[in-house]
Image (cartoon, rainbow, N blue to C red; front, side):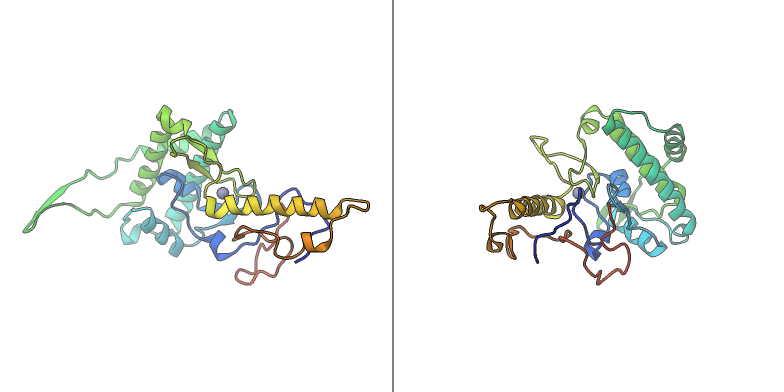
Length: 248
Ligand SMILES: [Zn+2]
């Protein structure tokens, strides 16, 4: 690959299966739901767009909805709750006020009581009863989790937005020094660093006059970090066929 000629404010990114995969590392149930829409800072990527993916998300999030509860209706309701939750978290991060309907929707969802936990006694002792959740109970658990985050000064202060602009994922930074800048070093940390490195190489390559850096310096093999999600230019999107290299 050669250095790119056209400058771009954000690294062009490829929507790989990796980018579309569900995330469960945002730090909590509600934030994991918010993360089912990826790349909020650029061209958003829907990660939970089908009932099958909704089922997968519930399983990954540790929720056990009743079979009949998982359908298009719950998908639509969770998606609406997701955007309300994002609005509330983002408003906090930006020091602004969320929309009233966002707050009202979270409160409405939280109104339903989740099932009371129960122990069952078997031959081998006790264990927690596994109860299938209704759709309303799923929504309630997510909404209550968000209220818990926003209601806890400590957790609220740990809310962050990924420093890789195209990503924009919100997460809880629970590291001791609270200096985590990216949702994931492996994903966005490396991508951002590689993009920065590439920009620096490009600038050096363009430097006028006799001091112009030869191609050997800015040529292939100059990006040291793994670049899982970013590529320096338009590429064929082998595995999605959509949203490849969307301008951001
Ligand atoms: Zn990120």
